[in-house]
Amino acid sequence: MEFSKENITYWTKRAPGYSEVNIEELETDQRSVWGRVIDQRIMERYPNRDRESIKVLDVGTGPGFFAIILAELGYDVTAVDYTEAMLAQAKHNAGAMVSRISFREMNAEELLFADHSFDVIVSRNVTWNLHNPANAYRQWFRVLKEDGLLLNFDANWYRYLYDAEAKSLHIADRANVEKYQVADENAGTDVDAMEAIARQTPLAKEMRPFWDLQTLTDLGMTTVADENIWQTVWTDTERINNSSTPMFMIHAIKQAIH
Image (cartoon, rainbow, N blue to C red; front, side, top):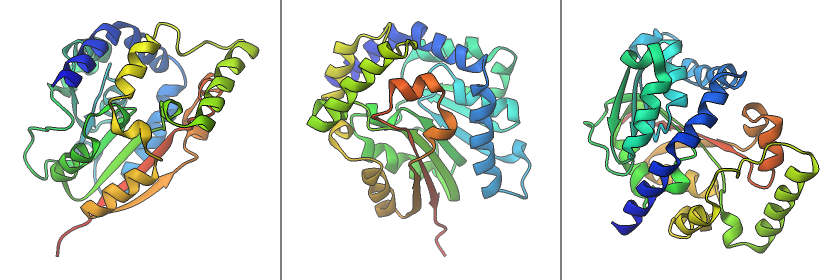
């Protein structure tokens, strides 16, 4: 409970600054880059369906980046976040799309939806921050329909707190930010607070995406990881800031029970 309060307090305070990052993404090519990546995977899974008929859940929507893009593409979108302040930012950022997205305040580890509610679940940079990510995956599995698709984008954020090699690489990243004179993504971030949160999250210690693949396989999903997705979705600035923690994509299918 104390961890949850600390987490919510941090992200409530961070909401305006984090929203600015999402707004910048929405105003650049990142909007179309991410749209193509997600849309391609969904339509490959459901080639004979209209987008309007495909129910998508964006877990940990934050300021609404994924939800907005998916609503613009025509999907039936529900977006949840544990932080009221983040949802307020998301609704504001959605603009004309706000009426096409169902925003709900909800814990990613304790979803309130009925079983088999969604065709697709998407998430970005959320699972690393969870107190019980295994339980979150169980919940996501539960609310997915049979043959449903999970797309989770994340990285080994804060592994440098536990691994000497990762620490050296993290220090090199910070040096390269200065060397190449790119925007520091840590600017405006309370690094001490984030590290304090990360020390309480189990995934900071794990080697991912191996952990995710094993956990989802144990649930009964067919899984694969694209460990090079960062090459498609990251800007040059993101690559310099985070070269030691490249983003991966988990692509998982909930198998039908016959």
